[in-house]
Amino acid sequence: PIYILGAQVGTDEAVRKQGTSCAAPVITGISALLMSLQLQQGAAPDAEAIRAAITNSAIPCDPEEVEEPERCLLGKVNIAGAFELITGQELAAKGEGSEITSQGSEDKSTIVFVSSKEGNRESGIGNRESGIGNKGNREQGIGNSGEELTEREQEIGNTGTDNQLTLSSDGVSADNITANTTAANNIVPSAGSNLVYVMGTVGYDFGTEARRDSFKQLMPPVEVNGVMVPPNPYDARQMGDYLGQNLYEAKSLIWTLNLELTPIYALEPVGAFADDTYATLQDMLASEALPENDDEYIERVSMAGRLSQKTVKLFSGQELPVLKLYSPRGMYGWTINTLVDNAIEAVREQQENADEAAIRKSLTAFLHRVYYDLRNLGQADRDRAINYAAINAFQAAESISEAVAIGMELHSIEVEKSPFCRYDSNCWDVKLKFFDPENGRRAKKIYRFTIDVIDLVPVTLGHVRSWSVPK
Image (cartoon, rainbow, N blue to C red; front, side, top):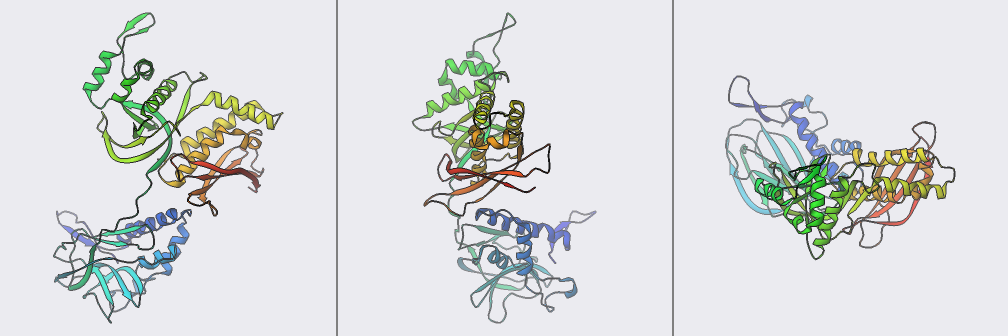
């Protein structure tokens, strides 16, 4: 059992409780960490594999240590064992050897430990009533009692991969424990690329009332139904027109990228091409404000940049991470009406008898499915591959012409690490599966794109491959 501090009814004091309700969140967290390892290795999250790894690596219960052995089913959780089954590598603890000695009362304690025996690592969560250390094994642990440990966190780092598992002990102490524990030895995962390729809509913010009022004073009045009215700095059309005449003012705004009207990034053009990037942002903003039936109307945009460590506070008080944009490369605006028309022409070249209405419906459904159902922040490699594959497939509609020509719609998008890749690249296979919404017996059509996401802007490798699969 796992003992966790909980609220005691009718008092202000905490009480230690145990049971499946306490163990469930701990096991859930461990399972989530193991799933993240699968993602980092390029595999799809497999809950059954995680379950098998946890159950198959469990440490059998010792009747002398467990108060009710009949309630201990498979045993104690062995984190290191499950980690090794998932990754094929050992989970090792490294650090500086510092002594922690604590004496406490003989109450039951929750122990998170790592044991080493003949080179084999074991990790688990169990109940101990005595000190840690038996039969010459070196064990390291944290127990619960009356005194608080000065070390509030024990980090168990993985030397084989770039992952780190942190187990926290908040306000706990050792029960008759004299252990050689390891302090954190500055174990830091290898730095990520911080590359982002994301879809959304362009917006702007003023940050302060003073900045907003300054724009209101500088912007010219506008004519509405023959009447001159004061400018409205929150009107995207007015702001787009004003910035078109005064592009230098674009640097005084906080540019944002939004998902469903929610800002997710603050955009900061940097480098030698910052002016060109600001001009692109202004053009996107102005085009988003056009009527939806306009040929130049932009419904979605894509951004390729690098995530920085800075944050920016908006006028609402929300803080956003700053996405640095180094050039207009990778910045695309979906002029949806023009794209659909061009896609229809491309499909007609492949399918002369294609139904224009069915094609338009299929392409529009494709766009909405990608944007609304597959929303992501574009930070993980798999997400960047999905975003680029979706954009590339829509812009190169001839690659999916056979599906859209007969009115098929997007069923799902699957992404997995490519088994083959060129040197110094990061390749992912993205499979777009299409189905016939009016005939469920028709075979599904799959289109596979191989995307290399090693660079700031992802790139497609090879040709698009397609095949049919049973329903």
